[in-house]
Length: 188
Length: 188
Image (cartoon, rainbow over all chains, first blue to last red):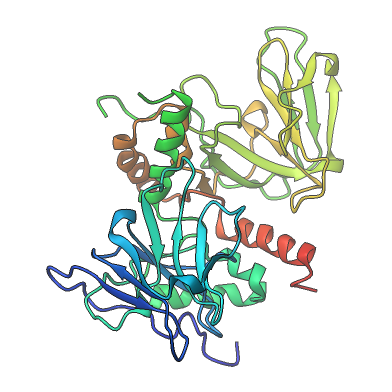
């Protein structure tokens, strides 16, 4: 590529702060910001290349983590929120004015039901967990990245020492398969 | 695990033979064997942990490759073949007597339409391409592998120097995303 790759303008590589207990996520509106309070550290923070996760302008990847659903509360201007795609597994609640996704929630039976998806870059607090892997890397082709640029994208993650996958991480993929095995009765 | 892992009883690790041009696949019946003639080298041979690929008794993984559809021909006892699951993307044609999958074919629009899925271990010829990666590793949980055994499974692939993925390989995942991008019009 002729220009440097914009994996994400604000990829969090800092170590998580000991005892960090959360913060407030704010949408990108100039005023009347939607505020979501997360009373928990984040988990499984990662770069995501899927076509549905919200990405800052120009970024190839989203930066997304989870937190326990019961620790995620809309605390201001919630009337500006709406679900982006009611048919999606993850119901992404976005600000209808600036478009920022404030939290994603799963309401149906699913391995990840009980975990809300959040973008910790929307918080002014420092101490959130850093990005620990990249997921759905190949999917960025579906948002317009040229296939011939994928080698450079994957090389960038290698340089950053961030493991990269074309699906989720092994731990999360095992969690999905374990849930499927329990649902089918294969696993007790 | 207390017993050695049976990744596959006959994992092909031998280098492909120069100029190898294919061979005959035979089902496991004692007589009247179904015979499928493959007039081509195999491609993308891999270990597959998905729940749909045919696996020899006791194996954790299938061993499966592709060959151009127009090079794959049923040459004996084709009357014993039937499609395992007509609703699956890959129509797996199996011997109704011994259960062996002889070839899988995609009839609908798909990135891999035009490639048949074959198990080269069913051939007596040597020279086929070796296994070059493992796919859908986490999925073996859905066939009964205990989640706590997955670390040993992945360690085995590292020992064998076989890259392992919980989806397909990066090249094939990129091919799927490229097809999706062309279908949606994102990519010309």
